[in-house]
Length: 152
Image 1 (cartoon, helix red, strand yellow):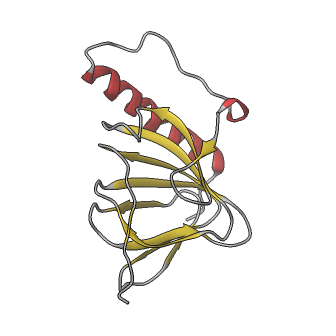
Image 2 (cartoon, helix red, strand yellow; image 1 turned 45 degrees about the vertical axis):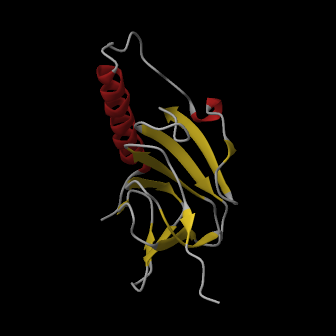
């Protein structure tokens, strides 16, 4: 099934809107105005791992509570075996996201793909060579990345 990038953009906007609405509801306040960020106005900063860059959409992945963030991985970057305390929900926007559970098969995910990385499950992940990849990531609480050390 081929996904039109405009359809994907609308779907991501809906997810973002629902996340922002849900966050406002928890605080007991309704959103007072639309939030509109053209791609060129989104601020990117270096992320929590080498080769990763983030753009905060709602919440704060470093402080806790639910959040949504855009992530860009440099082309060809692969993060070694690791795990996260919280489950991460990921929707690929561009490029090819690579996910491999410990002892499992590598899966290459193109635009429009979804992956749920279950909290506590060890995996490798990154971006295929050739082009950076960008994805939307959400979670219910603070982001962490715990590398699995190889036995000596």
